[in-house]
Image (cartoon, rainbow, N blue to C red; front, side):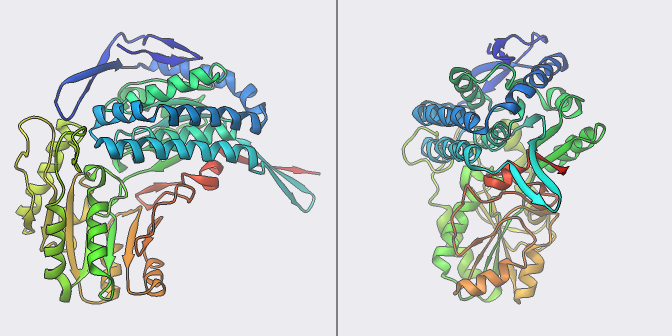
Length: 468
């Protein structure tokens, strides 16, 4: 069994208990990690608190050099780490390499550079000097769907800002977290600056969120779990950053290039087997083009080969666990029960072993249906008709979420005009690509705060004024 990483050294958990790591493609146990305890969190928080004065006083450029070294090692080891991610959470190897590993390496490098270039001296306002200082000890609680990227999005800016960290990765797909911890150990981060406590959310996660020595908690996961984290954090009035669920809309206007809009929209809905908080799982299309677009979406979906993450040609790997597959199957059944029309996919198992779900498309979906309102977190696309643009906007904004979205139109001007009406943290305009330096985060129940770039760094800074 693996160990925890506390105060610069590997250590056994006081619980003595472990959690099996299961390969979702084969259903075989491939590793075992500690089921951490509140006592382990206590030790990690104490180590982080003790390390904070020295680390926060370290020159930002020096912090940046260490992060740059870590980014370099992460890139060097990208093949091995991508294989770990493909093994413990099921992403196809090519996607695990490019999106799940190399992109986080780039994000880590961007924060290394920010640490060296960001102006932590905020200038002057009248007779006041403004200073930006690290918030303190950060508790980072991360999910299984992007098990390295979500860690880097929290840990890299926190360390760049001068904070110390206690990380709880998802116990479902923890292997990338261990690979990154090995890198941090090798580059010589001072003891206590970074600590890893694996374990279950209701035990380790809640202990981190409630701990009085933790000054900020940054959480990515479900909206339900985010509410619990926020409630626990409120007891000590600590800062909270939440990146939660989504039910993102892809609005296609009649003058858009339909072939491109549908192809890209289906790809975005199914990326990572649909296990993406910002996935465009609702395609909102004009009634006059509805049947044509449904046929195009079905044709696109049926080109997605479902199979082993390491087999060439696989475009959809398994869902991460048996529980996740059961959840998605329940939603597919619920869609049919409520009158939506299943036009491809469904609940049939494509392989004898593994937690696979076929790429699934629903037509005849009405606003307010369960599959239109709730986050499914699987390869399930709902296609909803509209008649007028204001109706399309109302449908797009008609869920509790506001994480992402997309608009397709014949002109950028028209697309931007509609995009500005969407109550969501980011909108792709006519296929605009993801920018890892732009702020990422949500409106409404999709969360609080932003990740990536300068906005992500500033989440981990306090602002102080000195009256001169």
